[in-house]
Image 1 (tube, one colour):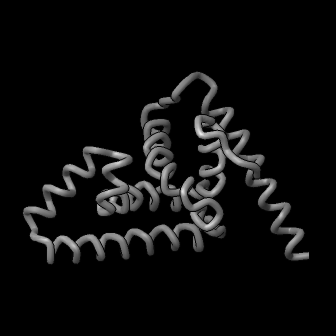
Image 2 (cartoon, rainbow, N blue to C red):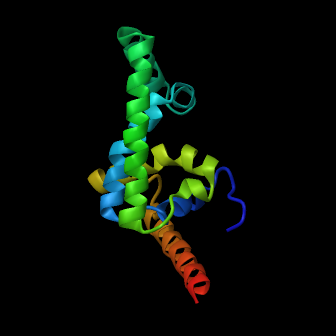
Length: 152
């Protein structure tokens, strides 16, 4: 796939969505993406000011020594969950191995939009979900064809 336009939300979600179709993997990501973001202070500040403020507040309550232990434990548990979700349920490497920055920047928004769509039927604009799903299907078909060629 070529370069993704910075503001082409459909292409970003289709790329990320092609790596996250299995319901169990989606649930794992829904649970573990936010704690990863929450415990990475500077990234969280950039992506989500509220997470940054809350994590800083908790760190000040815990003290530096305990806060780093909590951060390390949360990162290990959450990253392990992410890789299990991909290896066991998607049977595909995580998106971050293909496009590291896109995966880190898109993951929290993808998870949020998936939850809003699933729970409330929310779309950023009419037809968004149908368009993204068609692009996800095309991405998965392209990946499966490449995989078949490598195997044969």
